Length: 225
Image (cartoon, rainbow, N blue to C red; front, side, top):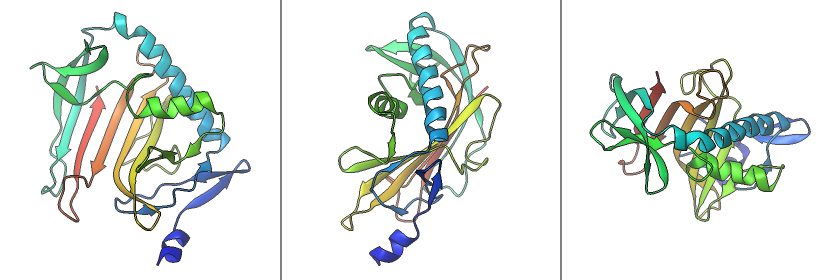
């Protein structure tokens, strides 16, 4: 069985390096053997990380800035995402952590602004700083973080001019020695410095089987307006 699962892993070759392509389904089993990402993916991730650094440095001046998202969600028992609602948020500094806060002072679901110190991208950017040869997955102990900028469907992250889509999957180590994927997230980052959005995420979608009965999943989607 293990040999069969391993044979279904999707691995392609680019610029002399291996590029890991993450599957579309939760519950997939993935090899935790680290594979180097290709030069094209490295360049895109470096561009995003550079934008995040620029944004993080500017955040002290952006407190109380208004950002409105078109947001929808799906509970475990739901068959589809709900109709989107506009959710106004503001940027706030809470205990030295920059967050998106709703008008009732509660945290937006995707409250993490993805800075150099917090958020999934902080882990990826840290790895890029320490080594130009970024590998996927990143070992987080019992969990593994898979990264890709390739083969992303427009349904999960619609392409946009001067923006980059990143797919991140989280998996827990299985007794078989493989990682079982329980959460997938697609994030689109702006590289456009003319609109004051460079380094900000303009789209996020997350699906997860955590806290759901077997065969069910929850989800959240947000689009910056």
